[in-house]
Image (cartoon, rainbow, N blue to C red):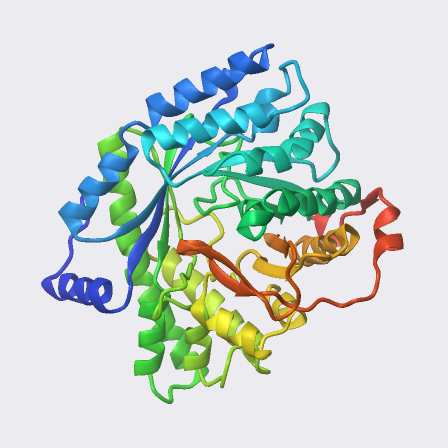
Length: 455
């Protein structure tokens, strides 16, 4: 049955859209490319291009039609595909950049802003295809505009693949070098995960998992401005009351996401997948997760109490959103990307928010160390060690964590990188100067924690 809304709910939604930056952050079409495998890489890439263009040709038009019908902005239209390491592995050749280039061409053809899935899952070890894909990442991301890559290096069940972690430190440095003229922009399109999920609609980490249908619509909602306004209006409410206010607000936002997702599913003729509840900020004023935490009483995000405030926010968003949709998935919580959040940018630039405090906050939020610029001369082993730390947080706490870090070529602490658009701008943050090289050189696999033995 179609959802029914009262006049009061409709007016409230209009106010949230017009005054508080409420939007659908993304409609993402998940698409299996498993049937595109071919012994010749060129043929596999051509098959992938043809299938993406055929299955996604109406995605943008349908999203725009829904925007007009419901008056709700849909900011991004995106595609996620089967991890390319799985698709390309049966092909000849060791350079998968051609696959990325054909993905990019298809994304441009259908009009989406990003396509995710240049990915490999190596939490327990690597196959030939995985190694080839990881080695191809710098070339793939430096020669395309819309392609996003991800690698899952750990999980609660498998532990952490430290050989892959070591390799990715070098890959990230190389990707930054190849895109140095754009402040290392290629690294903004690469996410290193622990406990990656199969149905994430958000970039840069989206891929279409092997347990997913042939084709599916996933929706990512957003609304930091709506939540911030609700917290401000709650005045001196105690934390229990504040959690209830956030839950009610998240319910309203998610209900809108469910409506849009099901409408897109009907119009495209593909199954509806999930609503991702994540509060995803942008650099625009009034669209910041940091401002929600400050509305709770923190002078600036990064102050003592920031982790507790973020934990409350993340939990309340999940609880409220889960009541509004039958199918909640993806990451679902609150993102804290530095470059994409005006409040985070301000706090990091002023010194209120340190790298170590950010790492602590990732223990209780969605994903992890996201869109953080660091000095361009940061050793690859240091980047690998940062990935290992964040993967350990995810592994032990049975949650998804990730690292999207940009060693900005030629930049030092205090300089800014400029990406523009949703990727925003960020101050280059200081890292611990001590070496982790000997630690990273050990290689092997960090064993899974005791929590893995829960069957």
